[in-house]
Image (tube, rainbow, N blue to C red; front, side, top):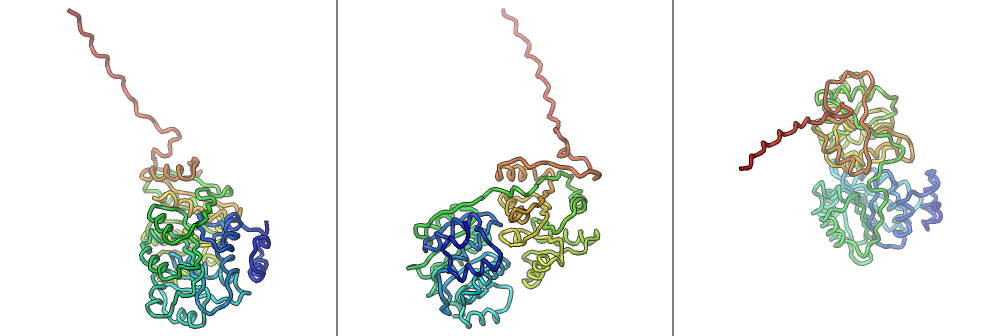
Length: 399
């Protein structure tokens, strides 16, 4: 199948051709025809499958320039909002449609200007979007397509009250709603029933890791985690590495440790860093100014960074689903990649949960020449406790 067979507008097809794309991904091939019909959609697709284009291409094909917001896209993080706005500009460059990017962490000046100049498409984070509504710089009366992206992430981050207010502000009659979420907990299921009308459900590769990715657990004692991380980085030739930590403080600590060990092209990204520095770190990593990005899960969900050769989990993620999102940063578009996870004894339960979630055993591996301190995790066949037989009870004599 080609994009030309899906029914997209000529202006959008022209932009796709100029971008060098020929065949749609599975989520695109399934979602685009349904979206073009104006139907509501619930879509579940793992990162790296082309989900953004699956909703951007048909929504761009269905509207004409009006100078008022007609497409509204809600995103949980500023980085995702930036990425999605760029995609709308890329695919809509021949349509005459204008895009506004709305999020916190920066001033209102540029955003006010974009809205004043007549934005047809608004890509926004919920909190700042409501600020614009109360400041009368955002109006919802002409919204024809509402796109809720990474909704489970917005739930996790506490944005759902704001999202509900925004949905209620949009027109109900004639509105198409596209709802994308990797998971559907009960709270989201109830919300979806409220805001969607007879939706078509599309699910693509929710739990799979790319077949081109080699992934492994590397057991080590708790006090050798940093040493093993350095050894993992040194053992392979790498183009770019993403290292995931659980906390912002840990990300800063790991970044400093790597720099102290002679790795000078390291940057860090998490929510405590101001927005301009986060975007600078992301751009520098994409452009090759940095070859190691240490990040919390704020960077795992949906951020499009191609060419990542290695992903390293500094700790096993507590949420098994986060493993899939993290690993999805490498092995994209059928490229090969490596995904390593440092495993210590206190994380065994998390490791088992990850294996159950992805439905396969993940190999335990060792680094040749590494001076391991002993941990039972390194035993190929952990010793079983010796159970002594209980002595037989003395027989009672019959009288």
